[in-house]
Amino acid sequence: MPIDPIAAGLLQQMAEAGMPPLNEMSPADARQAAEGFRALAGEPETVADVTDRTIPGPGGDIPVRIYTPAGGGTALGCLVYYHGGGWVLGDIEGVDTICRAVANRAGCKVISVEYRLAPEHKFPAPFDDCYAALEWVAANGASIGVDSSKLAVGGDSAGGNLAAAVALKARDAGGPALRHQLLVYPVTNHDYGTESYSVNGDGYLLTLDMMTWFWDHYLSSAEDGRNPLASPLAAADLSGLPPAFVITAEFDPLRDEGEAYAAKLVDAGVKVSHQRFDGQIHAFWQMPGVFPAALAAADQAAGHLKAAFA
Image (cartoon, rainbow, N blue to C red):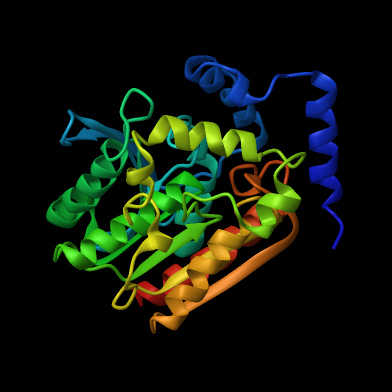
């Protein structure tokens, strides 16, 4: 279908503003520029409680934000959430609105993780923080109102990559048992050869050049890119992973690798639901103030989380 008129309007405004692409900036300048998108998240919903704290991590304390849904409750299921931003950008503030929306709709706790960023901290440092956060939640659930037998991981874009990788390690290392994984237009493969890169790699917010820039900052070598903890699609065996809900966007260079991962999970016997949001561009999930589709996606994600935690 045609591109969403809202997305087309946003892209036109950005083009008229003349902001250089992120891949032509330093990481510090790109982070500052990316903060401008926070205004597009819209008005955050009221939840019962929001607590900022730190938890111990392999490279020092990790900031997290803990959301308790409207209505409160204890011994709730919990989504451990990892923000997007190409492993270089982003923080817990940038996904505050969507995390509140998911918490309220799913009636679960959401714990948003501010992992270390590249290039200052290359692979596997961001992943290590994300896995440590899951282990901490599993070990300390009772103290924060979480039922540690009802855990899920999730994330968008690079955060979806990290969530998929965390699920792989949890399976292989005998880590925390997971009920579900929420993968929102996830990065799954260090490769640019898909059709969606060919047709969507320029002009739709996220570009091929940006993804090359992100990967180059994240990885120390091409060999790292073949590690399943960096490229989950490269994993030889996806059996035994938790059920997944995979969201993709039609006009997104990452569309095909997200859908390939969903298909490979199905082939491995994993229960998967997949929703392609036609007409949408990358990052729509983080902008519910602009895109009604973001809250529609949150509704669907919450339904899957409710079912997983039931």
